[in-house]
Length: 132
View (cartoon, rainbow, N blue to C red):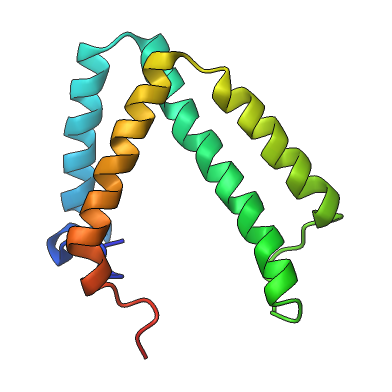
């Protein structure tokens, strides 16, 4: 994301010996360690599930949109029976999503708002995507 300009460039620094993004790996490790130390694993699992289910819904919606708007676009993978599979995936993920705990849904909503604020305040104007 930092290579695309959505986060500060410092986050995409690659370690000279191991060729891994070490700065963001360390930051993520510290954040995950703090959350693991402070919250019960059940709540963390629900919060992780909320984000994952939302991402799956967005992918299924994206596949449907691209099938309709760009039918001839070259694809790296195929989705068989997309007009059946994608709506079923959306429905299944939404069913699981709405059955998560209120606490998990609240945390998801707060993180989503924070993400939107970061995007519109910082990342949107710095993104390399769509700029030729």
